[in-house]
Length: 300
Ligand code: SF4
Image (cartoon, rainbow, N blue to C red):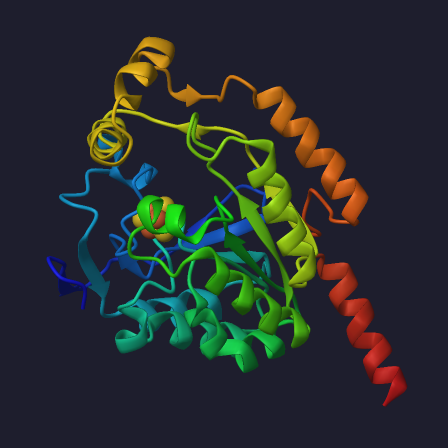
């Protein structure tokens, strides 16, 4: 348990939320779930601190004790085998997962019910579940590692309790070598901090070298009431003078784009093309899976 962080066990009423077909154009999700409430990684830019989500404190973790029971019931009643996303409001492999193993338990259930999955994480703990991920890959499994900076020292400032970027790249390589479809979510890009072409290039080159098949990039960040105040407080601590620069340039804008965001996108697309990295993911397709299954049956 990280210092100054609390965890409480709670009972949840529901675990799986549905997403309208076609609505998630980034990851192709049809369902999403959060097995925990709160997140231990403590990223200074985290949107989950926004007032609209009504969290008491992001680092106060609630462990949904009955999550697996609820998940099994929900999947048993579902005909539509759409992709299940893990954790939009937290990291499914935050340190507490090593102890509670809710993500692992959910993967076991999902594997038994043959649903496709997409995981976004900043943690190398995901490697613990490599065998399960390999099995689910026969349906569809994608693991995206969020990487914002190539520089481990900067990563320790921006994402203080998450494994540093080089650890994430190592984990990516292990998953990729095991045949799991993996890539990078390159976001957020923070004005005057990690918004330089060299950083984008270094991440892309390392992604390619470590087996990423795709990189999804967004050159900017979003800030709103709750997340903005926390972010500005951290800017004052780690980047003296930056807070007033942000206030002058962005005031209370939700969408915060680096001055040179067009150049960053150019570098991003050109480097991806040069390295043969896709800038969009392949989504799960039930047709492909049944074709693969038929092929497998025929071959046997
Ligand atoms: S890992 Fe994600 S959810 Fe957790 S603190 Fe960082 S940005 Fe927020």
